[in-house]
Image 1 (cartoon, helix red, strand yellow):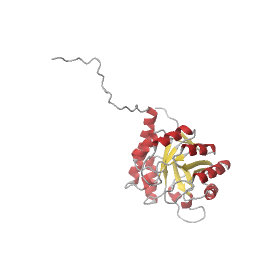
Image 2 (cartoon, rainbow, N blue to C red):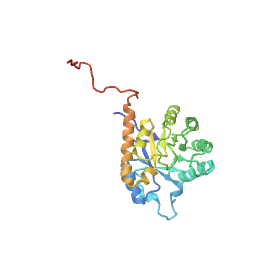
Image 3 (cartoon, one colour):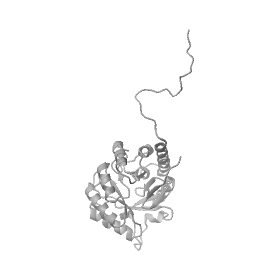
Image 4 (tube, helix red, strand yellow):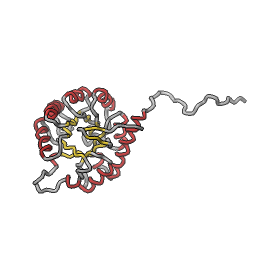
Length: 261
């Protein structure tokens, strides 16, 4: 079935799965899982990256930057100013202008501060960044972020690292109707079926970290997520049947002879 590629920040991606680089048992295991996932983009927390000249071992030593596009993120930032400064730092360090923007509003739930998020999106978009903001599953805010210059919107499926899956698929559908930029479900995925559901809803992609890194076998789970994203996308493109209250025979009954005693 014909399908188009996912475009983000002027770059083309065949894979619609984006994976993170945190929480793995080891850097070697991370590298193997990323390869198994088939992802072409990996997100890295700027705070975890050793910048040139620091002389420290870095996770970037285990990522082939010729093969994968790096998506620096502002994890751990609680104000718009802090997030903006972190993005400037990432760009100066050579990590590029495509950024995943996080402005956290609460340390317990890690829900976004949408006011600060909107402010930072406006600022960074004016400064030439391609901004992918992590937001809540609110279609109104998603539209505001698009209007502020976001290159995509990344609504949460559930709280970060919770593994609860897509808690409100109806809001994801509303977001898909509200915006014209790509919609990438970010946070809350727990297993392959969650990723497939996100894609079946029509999401343009899925970003995950904990679901793979925290699995008993991260490499096997990465493979499962790769297949789930592909299957969910294909099912969406194929078009599912409508839901009905009563049964509909799958075998034709016309022309079947009636037997009489």
